[in-house]
Image (cartoon, rainbow, N blue to C red):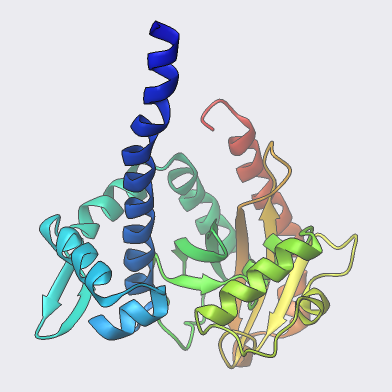
Amino acid sequence: MATTTSNTAGPAEEGPKSSNMRSLSRAMEVFAELQRAERPQRLSDLARNCGMSLPTTLRILRVLQDFGMVSQTDKSYRIGPAVLPAARSFLENDPLVVAARPILQQVASQTGLTASLYSRLGFERILVARVDGEAPLRYDLPLGKRLPLTLGAAGKILLATASDDELQQVVTAAVASGQEDADLTAKDLRGRLPEPGTDYAYSADERATGVLSVAMAIQNRTGRPTESISLTSPVEAASEATLKAGVPELRRAAGRLSELLEGSVY
């Protein structure tokens, strides 16, 4: 009897848990959409972009507002102030970010180029640390900015060993988020990636006009890198040859950071 009761109760008990996880997943989708947005978003736009009904989206936004994760002005929604303590905690306590700062400083000093550390987040990448080079970049790229994996050396190098199925998923996500045109194919993306056997990626005028970049993946014990380190410069201050001349230094920096990932910290 005890066994029968347990088996009967199991699915019923899993129902609320499954529903709660689905609700949490939807809330994270709405939150991520607000992070990508360049300006405050209306309820109807958020609902459409997330593929949810207006009532569901509104309920999610109200919960996120209660926790300070979302703020509202008139009929528009934006990221709220509660993200700042979370960001501060990450930047001060993440072991890779903390260890990367002096390494990025050294690379920037030796090459004169801007050194950056990126971390993969799903089908996107975010800037988690940066040290400016001698020539300032033409654009402001704040920490935490969501960027595509499909454009820029730091994104492409993270896809260098990806399967065709994964590339298709990346393309689908990039198109859905408006980061790529609808006619992009997985074959097109494969053509942007480094040639087999090349351990770095190079880009020119891809994500930002007038910007050159070279990047290398930071290897980890899983064999699927989720971080990359890059050197970047405005085109008037460097050339392709200048960027590629920094690859050996970039390779040494990536190796040092890889050692950290292989250690007990991770």
